[in-house]
Length: 127
Image 1 (cartoon, rainbow, N blue to C red):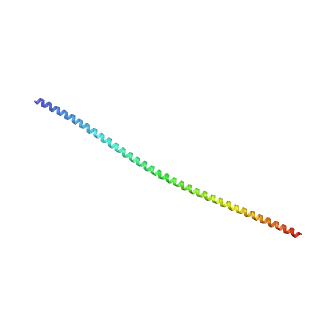
Image 2: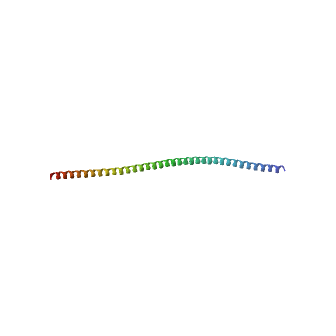
Image 3: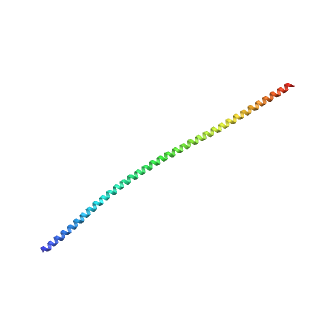
């Protein structure tokens, strides 16, 4: 009976050692898993920060692009108004030139008529 009891104690003791070894292995595995989890969490935070930075940069570039587009449209409108004003100025100058030419033509005709009249008067006076 004593031998059986000693064998049983030895078997229980061996089983306890196996359980202790399994528990130690599980604790080690759990610690390694926690380290991996923390590394994954840090990677996730780093990725999130990079994504937020990229989104902020994209938003800033979009605003800058929108402002540049607005400025280009405004400059185009200013150029169009300038071109329209120059076109009106050209038309006005052409009308003014035409009026001046017409006035000069009238003055030339008047001078020619006056010369003709003077010539006629001189010829009539000669009779």
